[in-house]
Length: 124
Image (cartoon, rainbow, N blue to C red; front, side, top):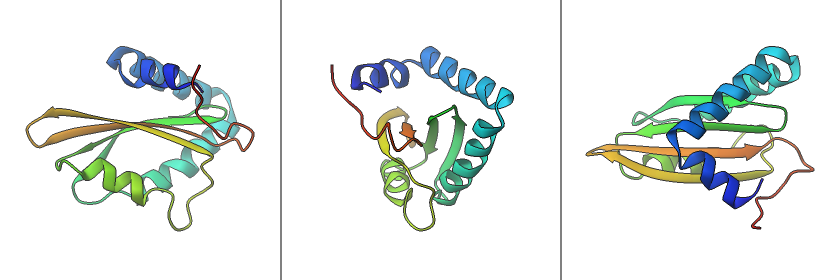
């Protein structure tokens, strides 16, 4: 995935919602994507604390993406640091973007690869 494509998707509410929807459709048709979604959703959820919630999460064939909301300014950053520690399934590339939605409400969107052959985010 390119940095440009990442920012185009996570920086637009519409594009992000469409990407999540497409990943959910992929998961509905493919048992492997369903398995990945369940496996990685558990890891995403395990990294939550009392100030963070999963807004959306889905996996396609080799990428997962989601959004975490937090009631603290550093909640998403803390979640991102916590994600991947312990018994988390492998994550080969991980990119995040954070947004302030309002007073005491922050959002972080993320994309990561589940494919060892797709282990980087590149610039064009």
